Image (spheres, rainbow, N blue to C red):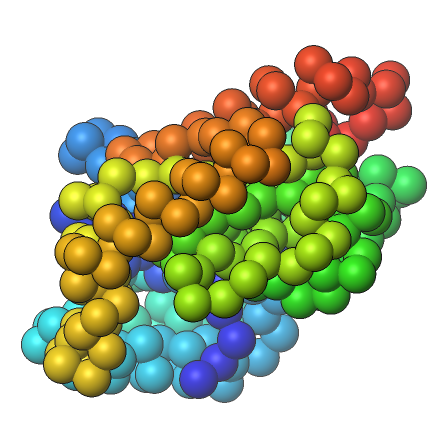
Length: 296
């Protein structure tokens, strides 16, 4: 399947698929604002960023439609796209028009066209125009690369290099929150907690002001895990078994207390809300300097 980034966990609304020739932040913001009008603060969003060829788009749409049809019986696709490349934008629009199972929303073409008509100027059609290639941009890229390299417990020997370290059980929003924070310029590592495995010893040496535990309720976690398993629930039923989930959460709480980390609840919260609460605590101990990019 084509590489993509997934956020959120709500199943109250259809998954929103974001396609962009930049990083897709604009479309994600619009998607979350639209979902909030339906009382959903953490919609499921799957992002295909940095698109350069239409074949990437076609493969992403076809594969995800097939997965949704297999898991839910409904292969329809809701797509929000920000493609400043006119050829790619037109190709996606035409492809969506040919299919009854795709609802595609172009978020930039009309806006760019309106400004062009009013000013008489031609747009640059350069992706990522908001992200000027200055020192702050490259710091963000470095933070994103670090975060990806330290996702899901990888490279624990480098935890001391992280600005923020997140702990949490499976499906507690560790990766989406890490990626969001990295896009603000913070180097983030996240560590999965599981009753059957020991966390890395390096956690003991992490500055407590940089250590955050993500916690949710058993009811919410059971629901997320059951939906995640889909029709494979019989294969790995223990993963979503209430008794196992309660044990999972209790052991996670115990470790968080032992480590003295700050606990943040993620249930019924958008990733942005979780990240902002983390940053409120973090910035009390580590005030951002004048050139800090996190709030840019």
